[in-house]
Length: 191
Image (cartoon, rainbow, N blue to C red; front, side, top):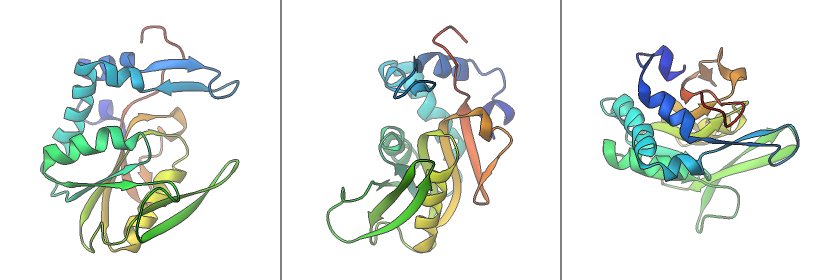
């Protein structure tokens, strides 16, 4: 579900967040309109508003873990975790974590990939939100849910800053709610 459909319709913060995301045409390949959140991070007010909206949503949901998907989930997840009194757990690409890991492979349109986390980072019964910058097909988030549920966690919701139009009618990933702040813009023109 998009934030504007869940009590934030007309909230000027959403428009400011959308405007702060740079659109880079034909990156990394022709036909892709890349949603560059680095410009959002440069705008301290829009960045704070992004974190605040997530914090307001999750503050009273007894969340004990914020799991961030590599790499852009790492930019939002720790701030959200600190604000709601939860721990942050990074979900990393293969061979990035030292020590014993548990992994979950998933299929991409052009091959396969994998997410890993440290064994023992999440305990059975812990309530988790998964955070990433963008959801396109939901494949990465689905793998994150599977990984966390394999260790007995309860995935409460997935949260993304940007959701592609294809997921607008999809308000769940693997049966878990999906919360999205903004839709992507198609150009760097003002929203």
